[in-house]
Length: 195
Image 1 (cartoon, rainbow, N blue to C red):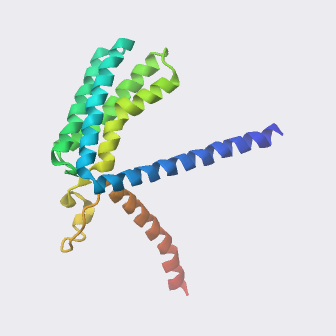
Image 2 (tube, rainbow, N blue to C red; image 1 turned 135 degrees about the horizontal axis):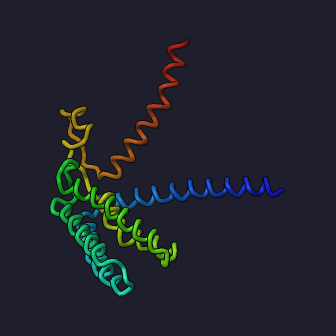
Image 3 (cartoon, rainbow, N blue to C red; image 1 turned 30 degrees about the horizontal axis):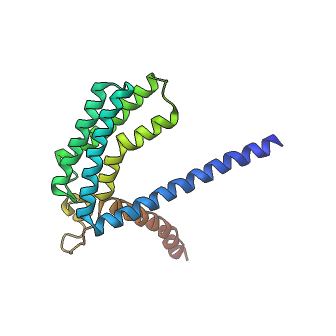
């Protein structure tokens, strides 16, 4: 009996995780729609979030977090804000965007290694810190930035066509959906040629 219940529990966790990922993707898609409709408000919200997080990071010094790590995170937030100069457009090959991506990964691993070595903090506190103080601003930028059309690989395909602007998350999401549709159509085309 424990074998069947154990398998059901594992299956339940897998299905629950898949639903959670799907819900997060849908939520990000809705946020990207909102940002596309109201870019000025989105820019202000991202700026406010970054400045508020700077204050929160400084307050974490009271809890004894590493001062140099806090300084790196505050500096990272200000590099992220440099992307707002051309908001909502961004050059994917520009130094500010590439620097932001590198700083996001470095900031994540810096704090991850810090919390692994300092086990006095609960898992929930670490997750909340990572979500709000490490990933909130980069995720908001990722959802809201629109790549410059010439920076996309599809720019060469439709060089003569006029394309509407689409934010980065929607662009990647639609590219993923198109590739899945193309893979589904390949077996259908092969079966037509076989007949």
